[in-house]
Image 1 (cartoon, helix red, strand yellow):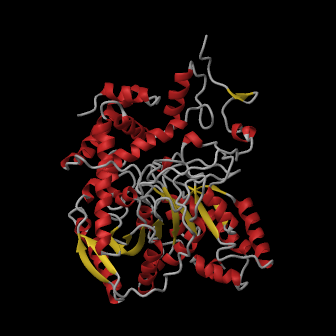
Image 2: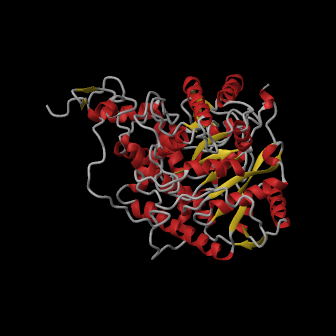
Image 3: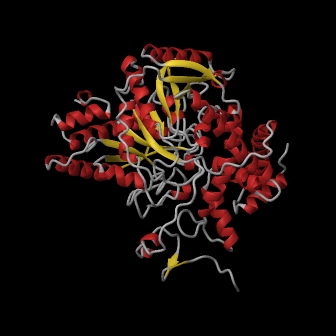
Length: 95
Length: 487
């Protein structure tokens, strides 16, 4: 098995994703199988091949630096779990 | 009464134009069918009766004023991944169970401007991650052909709804086969356009370099009519292609004489159900009878598409889904002890198992020390897969094969085994990696279950694919078969 329980815990920590402790071995097993499977890529030598990030090798489009959006704060914050005075509320970060 | 309506959107539009019925009557017909039949299918997560009837009345008024377009007044079902102002957009996730988008997706703007009537939002795999529609927070969708089987995914609700006659048209999105695979397993037609042809604005992101919206319908003509509405440049999507609009129906009646069809030997290998292979060869013979010519071709790196896809898609997914933080929108856990607890518990509570797997795989593939071995390697393989197609299209005009290696599988069969589930997309992911347009059409039945034929075209060659599909459907009636018990 290529992925160990501590690897799952480390990835979950990086992704800020709570995984219940009893599920850790299940994810370790499934992630191992997925990563062993994708390792089939290694049958081919890709030395010198330019990575393809975008199917059409697009270049980012530029636009004039002008304000195009109107203020929609109330509209956009309507779906937020917790706001006050136009601010998003989270647990206290700084003592 | 209900059987008085034709099934295809083109025929329904003709009836609207000649005044046989109004859009309000047509919309009531579909709402009645949804109420009567969807309990056993679970293809809709939200039905919009009031707003649909209001849109239908507007469409009838537009027609009366002489302002009707080709699809004005035609109802459609909208995959619940497209943002709709005022109507919940859930992505079939607990994370967005209460999310009401503050704006419409570009596709939705276009469909509504063209007078289409949204019947509701369709079920899907959570965040479009899945091939069976079993990962939805709202429960699995059933295949109308056999309720014990899956409809495919991720656009399984849209596919099941069209197959069961609950909507004549539906939107879908396709990241690795999510339009084409469910279309195949439910016996309908579906098209994934060239990457960048349909705007991703307001389409909830999964893997941004692969995601593409497209039409799902009963036949190629309806796909062309719907794509005419959906496709177009949008400055709000940074990867939208700035290219003139075109009429996708323009080649529907073009002759096939001399059209070169490539049959990749890698798509007819040992993993394919031989009965499906036989049906595809029989379908190709229909096209040859119309003057198309075939040759065997090779896509040497075809077997690497799924491995590369299952690095790239999870990597992009893990980045895209980092926006769900329990702060700005979406689910928030109760009583977080600190900010980290807020993030990780909100996400842990609201994402399902497949989404979590992909976030973890993607995080791993992008993490320090593994990036070159996984993500960079996959992007290099992606280049080789694209190059295979570029070479193939020097020799042929279109590539044909099966859409899936087997017919619809039983619910629960692959749920514990992600890799087997992933192989359901073995023929479809390459078109996403390369950004090519691709289409699935019904091509027969095996064990009384639908089989899909897969067409891959060159960049921006959707009109040719649709013309080829329409020609095939002139000579066959697989697209007119209906699941048992829905009519």
